[in-house]
Amino acid sequence: MDIRKIDDSISVAPQIEAGDLASLAELGFRSVICNRPDGEAPDQTGQQTIAEATAAAGLEFRFLPLSPGQLTPQLVGEFGAALADMPGPVLAYCRSGTRSATLWALSQSGKRSPQDILRMAADAGYDLGGIAGALAQPG
Image 1 (cartoon, helix red, strand yellow):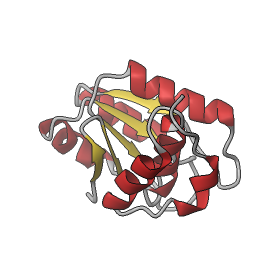
Image 2 (tube, helix red, strand yellow):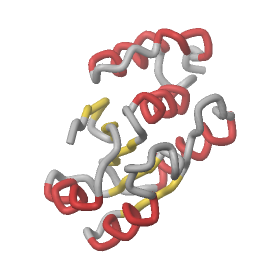
Image 3 (cartoon, one colour):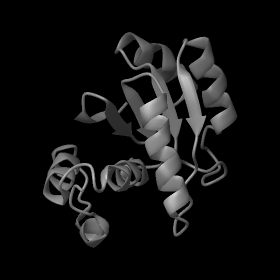
């Protein structure tokens, strides 16, 4: 698993497998968010399989799929609410981790400075400069 820690409450990763969930629990994760829609690749493990393995490992699970080009304020809000509601730390995943990192960044807009958000994402290996204009200063 290529787990990339953003802060103590969230890490992001590329696609995980059902067999990874016990290890994630051992690493201290308490929740998983799937941001990858089912069916993107023929060899992709579907969210239902991951959800079942997550439950078996004693973790919480949310399915908040983000299809390319389908980013909405509602999904950003749902992602932020999931982070607030679910026990942490949380692992969010998609195909490469970028969509999960983007949802995290946008959910933090107005709560952290754009510079901090972009730096934290970059420290985790994600260049989110393309969304810099969408990030608001803390209000």
